[in-house]
Amino acid sequence: MSITSRTSYIIFICFIIYSCNNSKKQTTNLENEKYKIMSLLIERIPPGPPPPPPPPGVYTKDTIAFNRYVDSIYKLDVKIGVINELSDYTDNSYKRDIEDSLYQELIDQYHSSKTSTCCIEIGKINVKRNRELKVFTVDSARIHIKSVENIINPKVKCIVNFSDVTLNEGNDKAIIYMGRYSHPLNGSTSLILLEKLDGKWKIYKRITLSIS
Image 1 (cartoon, rainbow, N blue to C red):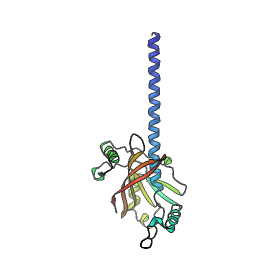
Image 2 (cartoon, one colour; image 1 turned 180 degrees about the horizontal axis):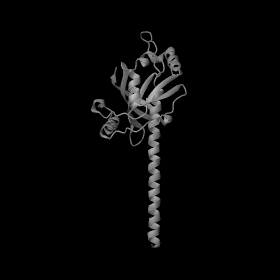
Image 3 (cartoon, rainbow, N blue to C red; image 1 turned 90 degrees about the horizontal axis):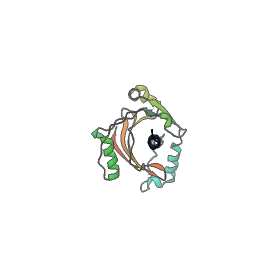
Image 4 (cartoon, rainbow, N blue to C red; image 1 turned 90 degrees about the vertical axis):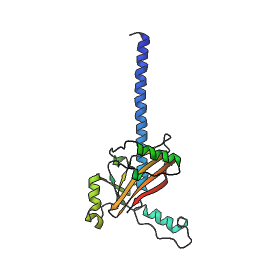
């Protein structure tokens, strides 16, 4: 092998190694963003009941009592069940057309792609200590929700499932489907639009798809 050929071979090997490492890094970053979004949505589940309505003519969020109540209920201990695999929401019954074209592209992208049903690593969901996560399979969640014991003496406040997260190229906008169930007559499915502001994910809009 000539010096030129050997040099070209070394450069080629270095390029392959760099490409593999770069691809692995991008995959890791994408996974981290997905778990940050799941963590945020679980953190937004209130452990306690909603506050009483304010007096007539008073905007709820302007009242000191309302804000104190919200702060207090989010400090309560709560157990939340999480189904340990991604759920499939690609059926057209879950698809919605919205005015925001950027988010509409993500919705279309999710529904045109092959859904992922990979496992959710519960340990990567980072929530506050007052939130204890319980792992459920799809089958065990279905049995638990329908059980008489759960209705009388629930072991968890609710059980949630998530679709895969779809992000834009800039990784600053995302959509995810989320189901939340307490018992057969108390559940909902939502399409959640998110945006990243100052390095943190925020809920931009929540669209309720079904409720019982």
